[in-house]
Structures are given as C-alpha cells and as structure tokens.
Amino acid sequence: MHEIKYKDNIIKYSIIKKSNIKNISIKVKYPGIVTVTSPSGISNSYINDLLKSKISWISNKLREFDEINFNTKKLELIDGDNIYYLGNLYTLRINDDKFLSKNSIYLKEREFIVDISSHISISNRRNTIYELLKEWFITSGNEKIKERLNIYSKILNIYPENIKVKEQKTTWGTCSSLGNIYINWRIFLAPIDIIDYILVHELCHLKHMNHSKEFWNLVESVIPDYKNKREYLKNNSNKLKI
Image (cartoon, rainbow, N blue to C red; front, side):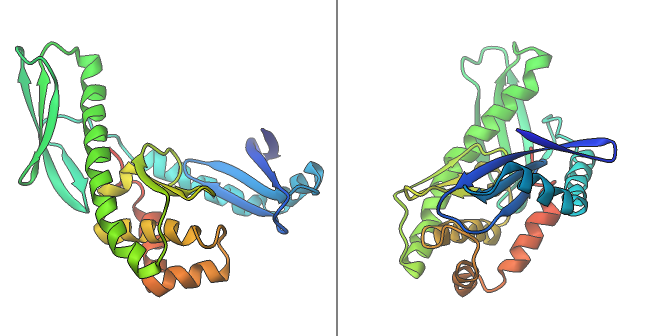
C-alpha cells in the first residue's frame, strides 16, 4: 500500500502492474478505494507524481463517498422497516417465537416475513436478521440473474463460464479472465433495468476486458441509455443498502 499527503489527509492507494497494457488508469471506487493500474515498466515514483497531479480530482471523489456514508443510515431492521427489492419497497415483518428451532425468512405479497427465535439477544438481533436477508437476496438473485442471462447472452452471443451472485464490498459486478461473472447481491435492491445494465456490462467485458470505446459501443448496442443507468447508480448507491 502506498500513500500521498494532501492538506491534512493521507490518501492511500494500491498499484497493480501489468505487462499487457500501455496506459495508466486511476480508479476511485466506493467506499474510497484508490487503485492505479500501470504498465510494468513504470516506476512507483512516476505513479506517485501522477497521482499528485490528479489529487484534486481524487480528493473530490473521496469526499463524495464520505458524504454518501454520512447521509446513509443503516436500517435498524425492526418490524415495519421498508426494504427495497427490484426497485420496489417491501415491509419487514418480524415474528418472535420462543419455541422456534430455526430462523427463517420468506416473501409474501409486499412483505418480508422473518420468523426469529425470541431467545436471540438484542445485541445479536439485527445481525441475525441482516444475515437472513442477505442469504435470501443471494438465493433469489442467483435465480433472477440466470433468468436475465438467458435474454442477454442470446442478444450478445456471449456466454460466461459461470455466473454467481455473492457478497462484494466495492463493485456491483466483476468479470474474470476465466470467463466467470460475479454480481453483488445488493444490486437486487435496484430496479430490474439497472440489474440488466450491470449484467450486460459484465458480459461485454468477456469480449473487451477494458473500458475502451469498443467496449462502451457494445454496451450501448444493448442498453442505449446506459449513461442514465450509471448516473442512477451514482446518485442512489446510498439507497441500495440494508
């Protein structure tokens, strides 16, 4: 891990060097991760100087993430809370049962129903409900993403080796050089057209492992308003949390 000082702050960043690229790219991702991807022949001192020249832009991006974190309050996950699923609000209903042997969750009409043991301590209660919700979103998400994959793989004639919904801290989706696509379970809080954009984005990476003009042209051929989808994620990432 490397760092540079800006005013009274220390900004940490990581360097990834690759022999098969020609240009340096700087990425600042939520919740504040700065990554530099560079050709293997570029010195660390050169990269450090480059970041200093971009420090105002980097600092502004980090400040945006700080504002999101500040304005985002975690749900208490108590009876009556509202939770997004596919862009729609559902009410959380919690049933306490002192005879319950296993906690469970299911969706009924416009409600998430949680059956939970009343013996669980107050300090562990929120985390227990959160884990139930996460597991539900991952299971449901895996079913939904395969359904959407059947549509968009045929349109693009691109087929991943594997696709999986899982926990991801800083990205909505990733694509590996082995042809595997991983989707962040939290994206299923968003409307279906946003989920489709993330899926198409990662499918297009199987053909273009970069963000070149060719890559974005391919995305646009399927999602003509992809820029609006990107703007939605930028402006609403604070809502896509539990």
